[in-house]
Length: 478
Image (cartoon, rainbow, N blue to C red):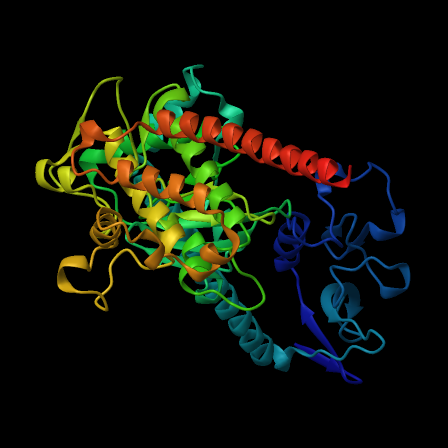
C-alpha cells in the first residue's frame, strides 16, 4: 500500500482481474451492472489498458470520468516512480462530506455486528410470533371441533336450516365486542354462565353469554338447541343471533334487552318506576304466549326448564322477553324428557319433576305459576322470613287461597291499581298452574286461550257497565 498526499492506494496487478470479476457479479450493489448485460461499446473512456490488465465497463480508470468500483473506491492507473511502468491501483475516493479510511474497518465491522444482532433478534421475535399464531389456530380448531362446530357446519350446509338466521362469530370478534370480557361489561351471572354486554363491528349492541363447559356427551344436543333456537321468531322470545365455538367454552350471542329483568322490578322497586297492575298483567300474558308458542307452535316442542322472573327480560317498552335457554330441550311430540340430573332453580321447580326426573311441558307450567304468584304478591319464591312450612312461595300462596285470604298477601301496588274481579281470576289461574299433579295443570296453550277469552269477556263487561251507567244518568236527567 502506498500513501501519497494523504491518499491511499492498493496495488492490484493480477489481483485486479479478480476484483473486477467479483465486482461485476455483485447483484446487491446498485452502482454495479452485470458485465454480461453491458453494451458492447459503452463509455469507451472506461475501458483502458493499464499495463497488461484491461478494465472493462463499468470499471474504468480515473475519477474524472466517473468510472467507479463503488461509492467509495475507484481503480486508477499510476506510475510509482520514474523507473516503473504504469500499473493499476485501488484508490479511496475523496467524496465531499464523507470521510472513510481503511483503518476504520474495525468500526464498520462492529456496526455490522450490531446490525446482525438486530436482525437475529427480529428473526427470533418473528419466529415466536409465527409459532404462537400457529398454536393459536390449532387451539381454536381443537375447541371448534370439541364444541360441535363440525356438526353445526354440517347442519348449516344441509339446506334444512336457514343459514341467514345464525352466524358463526370468531373469538376475535367477541373479544373486541366485550373489551376482552371485561368485568365492567358483566350484565349478570347465573347457573348457566355469565352474560356480557358487547358492541359488534356494525354497531349493534348484543348480549354475549359465556356458557359453562359443555359435557362432551351433550355436544350434539347442544348444537341442535342452537340451531332450533336460532329459528325461533317470536316477539316475546329473546333472539339468538349466533355463537362462537372457537373458545374453550361456547359463546352465545343474543339481542340486547336494555331494561333488565322482571325480578329486579318486582323485588327491588324504586320511586322512579314501579310495575303497575296493568303492566304485570300484560307481562304475564306475553310470557304465557311465548311459552305456548315454544310448546306447541314451534317446529319442535321446546321446554324451557328454567322459567323464573330473572329469566324474563324487559325491552325499551317494558315488554316481556323470555331468555336464557341454556337448559332448554326440544323433544318429539308426546315425549317426556328423562334426565339424570335435575335442572332448574329452587322455588320454581316442579315437585313432580324433582321426584321423578321426568320433565314435561307441565313442568314449565308450574314455574309459570310461581311467576304469577310473584307478580301478585311481590314476594320472593323462597324466603326465610316466612314460617318453615311456607318458605316456598308456591306453598304460601296455595295455603292463603285455601283459607280465602288471597287479598291479605297481595302486593300493595296490585291492591291499589287492580280490579278485584281480574285479580281473583289471575289468582285462580295461578292455583291451577301450581297443582301438585301435572295432569291437573292446564297446558300453556290453554292458559293463553283462556286468558284471551277472559280479557274479551272482561272488556265486554266493562263496556256494558259503562253503557249502563250512562243510561242510568240519562234517565235521572229526564
